[in-house]
Length: 106
Image (cartoon, rainbow, N blue to C red; front, side, top):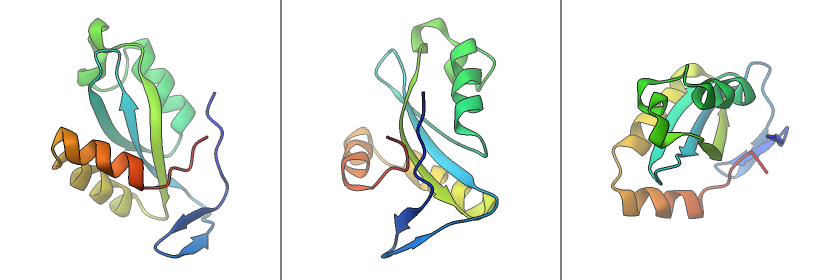
């Protein structure tokens, strides 16, 4: 189960948004990371684990996946930019990012 924090501290301030867009990271069963964006974290994780999500997570060796990180944004564009930036990082840089950036899931 995913528990969300309703406010999220980002760039020194807290905010709440009406429509939430999330950048999220999964830890797949084969120990790889998958990054994406969504408006519904629980639904998206379920889709990935049922094999109906992204092609990357449809492979049996990648399931089940665990959601290990999520950040909330007020626009789809901002969430997609965060996803793109994360995907450009090396594995070591991704691990560093995950250990230093606050997640909105507990």
